[in-house]
Image 1 (spheres, rainbow, N blue to C red):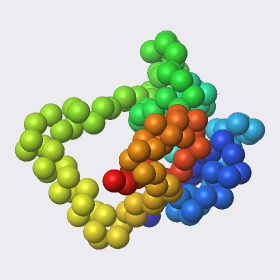
Image 2 (cartoon, rainbow, N blue to C red):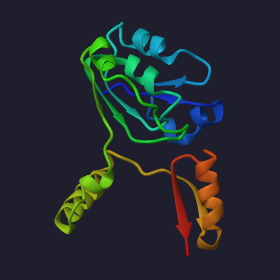
Image 3 (cartoon, rainbow, N blue to C red):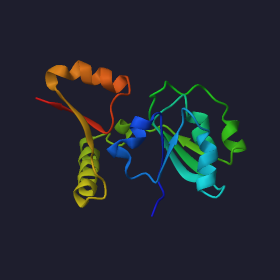
Image 4 (cartoon, rainbow, N blue to C red):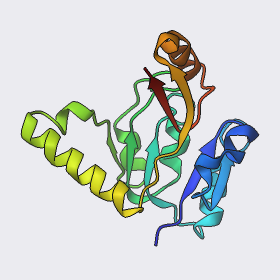
Length: 161
């Protein structure tokens, strides 16, 4: 029942098969995407933002949130988020921000197995699809890393033996 809004840096990323679940693709590199989000949501904003981009979108992502919204900052594609005044969260509507790390959710073997079982159950149900955008031979691992770092990849990247 969710409306999914995605932001991308290029037409190529917007046109990619990975984003077919998005009802709206916005371009953070060439439009004021918080304004478009407000239009789409009737001026309310969204309850949650998942931001993997980092420095270039952090403040705009906050501006997309509705009152008491939550932003999950989990990536640094354009660099780390610079320090900001905590009072900004109050001024923008009593917002919440979190920066999770996987290792806090799989701190021991029991948690790892529980989380893995939950993930595979959702994937097996078809509710989530894993899209493989590119494959590299294991001997090309360095090139795979360069492609990821240069943001030339979409979806999952798989290394093959």
